Length: 489
Ligand code: SF4
Image (tube, rainbow, N blue to C red):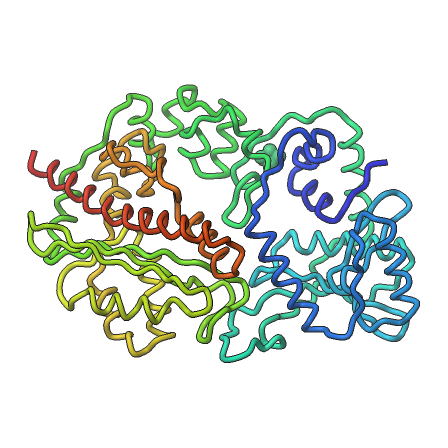
């Protein structure tokens, strides 16, 4: 008998292939986001403190001992049970984050999530839990999803009542009949042969979720395919009719597409150059030029005063300054080194000292830097004037690339600086750096702040961060040089 947990159930409803791989092909590694797991542990522990005085089940959910401990806690009429574990005779099992005793023979399920709002699949998860508990004879009165409260601003000690928000899940849940039917369907799939993989960008990878089997299912799909060239659901339709290779897509399907140029550049292996767009950008420059980049990290639980759950906290900046055309570059930077304190005051002071009140501030993807500045202006009003002045002078170097003033097919449809830099400044790349992107920088710094690193790891990370963030601003300098050279040609 194949056992099905709540995460198996949700995985199977997202994509039956994923569940089949997990259960039948354990040799295919399922990539997991360790940051998500760490955040879940941190939030789960605090959530139990929000409902104190309960009994914790210490055995693992897949061990019979967990069920024995749960039955003892129920018999003892515990007010709350953390990780209460149940299993049906047919092999479905779950551990409930918090089971609340209503003292009238009924219980409430509270499912804790480290997000700031419930997502669709959270309701699938809690529906499965209610099904298992009901099949085990427990009377479930209400079900709740508890997330972090994105409006909560920390001042002093954590206020656990304010940190969390409870959402009544009853209206959004699947009926018990539907859950049963889905379990029957998933079991039939697990007992059958491997399914044909049906690739779909929105199913396999979204802003909030990336399936752990993408490395397997997408292994033959080139970096620039119908999934990059067309938006969903059109991409899915074209894939179903013509496959993923753009060479097989009839031109009439893309002649009216906004990114027709990208597709033609890919098919003909040519660059796109539009000097008017490049010139428009260069004409906006005001000297001196400040090339600025931030690194941030996010903690689900606010670590400092004046911060919210999941807020982006700036911990590093790199700034290259050029006072006049052809002048030497001067580099300034800030990298926080103390895991016990808020990085922002030190960073803001250094930034305030380094940026004067005139000149363009050049960033790459201004939404990010502008949002960071606006938030820091709220949290540290003494710097609001300077931050507002910086935002007023920001020029986004991504714009000329986004508007296709310059495009190389090796960018594969992306205008990320990780793609434009090697495309136009091939001697510079992110591949040989110790940190390759902002997500890695953020994750490693979070490990530092939560004291999960050894001293040697911290020393190495700090060196890598200096190199990585400095490269981001130097990359902007070099890309602007490329643009100016092309304009003069
Ligand atoms: S990568 Fe896509 S098709 Fe493959 S298992 Fe994941 S969701 Fe399913």
